[in-house]
Length: 390
Figure 1 (cartoon, rainbow, N blue to C red):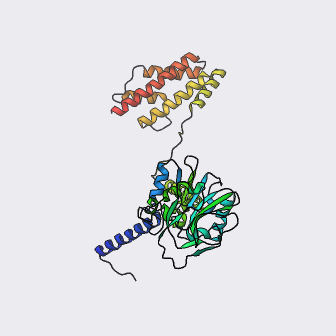
Figure 2 (figure 1 turned 135 degrees about the vertical axis):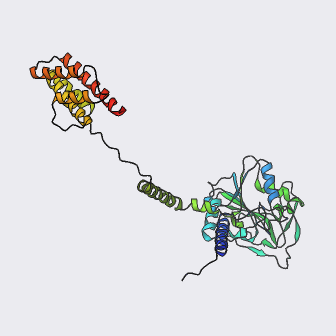
């Protein structure tokens, strides 16, 4: 049972459905993340105090080859000491497969800058514990040893509530307090991991405090030869819908569907298009046949036969034009032409009688036969014009 709808209600319903469909498509196509899409973690898109756009822009201006990384660790380029992956303040837990991929990247020679307890868990670190009684407030930490990581950074200011308490063999501690390390470096295979207890030294607000800028630049390395991949994947900025679709079999399926649709449209167009009349083949003898027949008459010296055929064809056309029933004699045709007003042609009677006599006697020459055939053709054209005028 269908409910009757007023035309105005039907129009309103149609517009509402279209708007809903448009909003759904826009929601699917809109990229996840933006300049103000994140709060509380150092996103390179954010200009708030806890964002990291200032540090990202600084590296660009210093000549670093830097780009935002929104892909999983499995898509990282070939590991190299000249490639640094920054995972600052990750807000999403890594899967077991992603942890394995990240550790493989480091073990094969890559460099990673991590921060916070989630960052430590990505490399399977043990010994990162909360600080007893900490309120996650800003604190100052002095450099504990001279090293490239502490150059021009005698002290840093960091906001963190965790420490790396239990140091492993080969691990270097650079900043910390009695509760544990706040900046440390871990060697894994051919690569290294620099871990910060908090991400505040590279935030828009924290990078201006104490020697935090020097610590950040020391951790990144020299400009020019270092490629920096700043991770946004673990901030929730993932590939957009079109990127996801491009990595799936859907493009090939769409191509097949497009080809099928093209075939259907072409087939329908051929069956339902404009009707065109069929081309009819001429029932007249082709010119090649006429030439061949003429050559045959010439070889056999059959001028009489060619003249007889031309005369028979002329008599047939003339009888049909005059409305005379066949068979009819040549004298009767001549008399009918002469009696028809406006059909008088000079030499018509003489030529017809000469042809009749020549065909009875036979032995007509080729030149004479050709001349008479031309005259018959001329007579036919002139008589056709006379009949149309009447």
